[in-house]
Image (cartoon, rainbow, N blue to C red; front, top):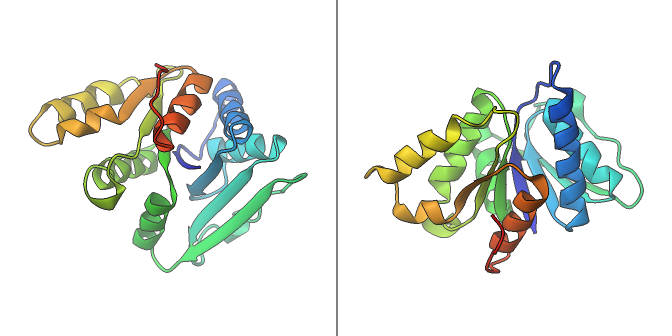
Length: 192
C-alpha cells in the first residue's frame, strides 16, 4: 500500500510537530505502507522520511525535472528503499502522485499543502481515483479550521455526498494510519 503525505516544509520552532512527523514515518513503515511525496525534502517531510527509514520502510519521491536537486537523495539506512520519479511539469507530478497512492494523509502546512489537499479532494471525488481515503491529522490546533470548511463544502451542493465517507479527521497518529490502511486496502474500518 502507498500513502501520499501532504504537509509543510517549514518547522520553525515546532519541535513537538517534528516529533509527530517522525512518529508518522515510524507508523507507516511499521504497517508496511510506502510513503509517496513530492516537493522539497525539508521540514515535516524530512522528519517523516527519517521516521520511515528508522523502521526500514519504503519511500518514493516524485519531482518535476530540475526541482529540489539540492535536496536529493535522502540518507537510506538498513533495508530501507528509496525510489525517485521525475516529471516534466508540476501538473504531471500531481497526476502521478494521485495515481500512485492508495490513500492520502494531510498534516499541517501552508498554501502548498492546501493546494495539494484541494487537488486530492477534487481528483478523488470523480473518475478512476474516486473513493480513495483522505485522513487529516488534527494536531496542535493547526488543522482545526479545515474541518468546518471541508464539512461546509461537503454539505453544500458543490461537493458529492460520497466524499464524506472517505474524508476523516483524527488526532491519534496510530488510529489515523490504521484507518487509512483499512480504507485504502478496501477493508472495512472500525477505527475512529
